[in-house]
Length: 241
Image 1 (cartoon, one colour):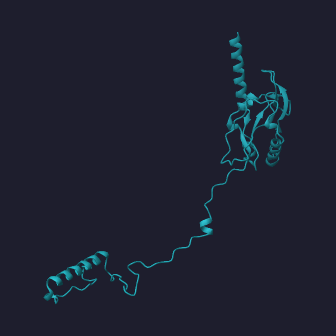
Image 2 (spheres, helix red, strand yellow):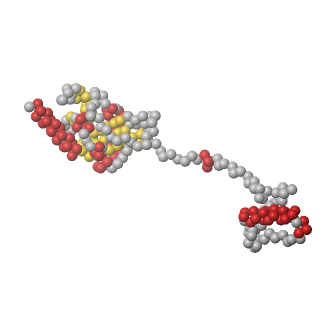
């Protein structure tokens, strides 16, 4: 009998969870996406759901404190609490102020649930529970936590970190370009005039020209009487240079 009673309770809870999800929707579907940005405020999600007793729609919310020393790139995924105590962050005055501000700015004509101290029927403990604004029926926190994430909308978040911009210092203080210094091929000294290659020549022709000079000097030392042998002139049209 105990197993059958437990199974009946589980089946009833599953049915209530299914009904609650069927009657829930993300607020942005009805009123458009609208997120309030605060300097260091909380992350705040809301959902629209129907009361299990009177079926009137109401606005529920879940809040998470942000770290003022941390810069966020994006909002975390919603993770609704399944258990709350006598005090809860959703009842903080700043959270209420943001919910009310979102309602005003979006023009949402929907009742905002109240938070009251109620006693749990299953455990007999008191906790701050959401209550229907129309019939005062209690919305169990466990069933609220079972509402699918797709039925929640982010309505408030701290300022997210801006995209990193390039360092403007090179543009504000550009480096000075070094002064041009002539290379060994164009540098001139009183003892060493400019030694640029003739037009149309290449580095290979310069090397061959130097080799021919060395060969000519060696030939003069071996045959001093043959100094009348004509020396090939450097020419860009000869094909050797």
